[in-house]
Image (cartoon, rainbow, N blue to C red):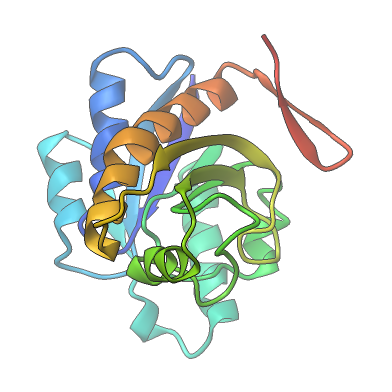
Length: 208
């Protein structure tokens, strides 16, 4: 049974999707053993508490730079014997001291179809604002491994939704979360825990 550590910074809707999937037996071969938050008082911590999952707060503001903060995160992941790290609305880009130590063991969800509308500065509603500005007809979300570059790791799963003529960034965000993120993130986590993801030439392949 693989130990899953989930990193959060806010409300924790993707964490809730993972908690619900786990409760329904949809995550095979793994269990959420710890939630780590970059802020105290966020609702994601309440979600963890309600599910009986231990949590740790490592405040970003207590550290001078991303390297020292990342080292603290790595120390906690090592302490938790993390097999898989899931970034669920985690708002800090981790230094390579973490990404290299946990190579192909960190999963992130990005609310667009990578390589579109991604990279540094593309997060939250900004992603959907840019997609609507561009006039795309479909958008979606990408579940991918994390490496040293923002949103540049191997893609595991992608899913799409249609963009409606009257969409706002908020309505598009909600549709993508409900129809793609909350479904594909637990699926990708389960695939990892079942050892069904193979890496070849820096690309991820799903073993049927």
